[in-house]
Amino acid sequence: METINRNFNTTIDYISDKSNQNQDNSESCIIQQSINQMLRLEIESYYFYTDMEVYLYHLGLNGMSNWAKLQASEELDHFKKHVEYAKIKKISITLPGIDEFNQKFSSPLDSFEKALSQEIKLGDFYNSLDHKATNFKNPSFSNYLTIFVNEQDEEINLLDNIVKRVKLAGSNSGLLIIDHDLAQREV
Image (cartoon, rainbow, N blue to C red; front, top):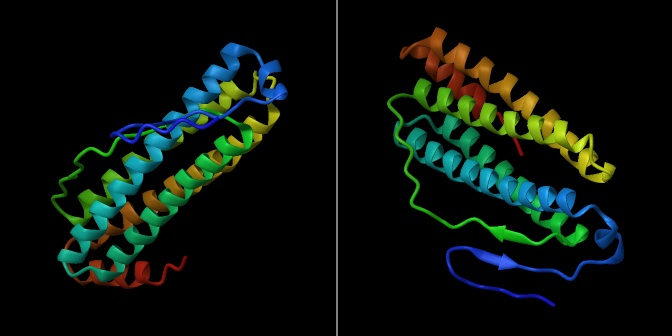
């Protein structure tokens, strides 16, 4: 049975199978809430990077803008992976509402510092959730989270390096070199 409510928040309920029914209710509830939180955080990140993409494009930093565009696409892919996981595991989800989103940036450095903060926020969430999941009777959820924990570590390190480089470059020609370097990113 599938119920769809098409307001700002969409709720989708799936029939549970016997393996899901055997799972501890509180654990099942935590996993469901976690998936919903993961969906919200990933779509917020998609919005963030899309806003960053447009900001950097308007500054003429097309390489940095392209980097942010690819980052936004990656966040949307994470969102879709979480939806697929929920479908496979027959977990009910609540899709996050779409609120107006307009991140204010004062400089390219500010945009990358805020991106780093966004990735740290995601990393902290996934690490905390992964710590809880190790106590669950559901190793597949823990294994699933490990992918995102590792990826967040990589993203944080990458952005930390970009922030350091942008700080060193200041607003001179060094910024254009970084822009060129970031243009090389591929899907």
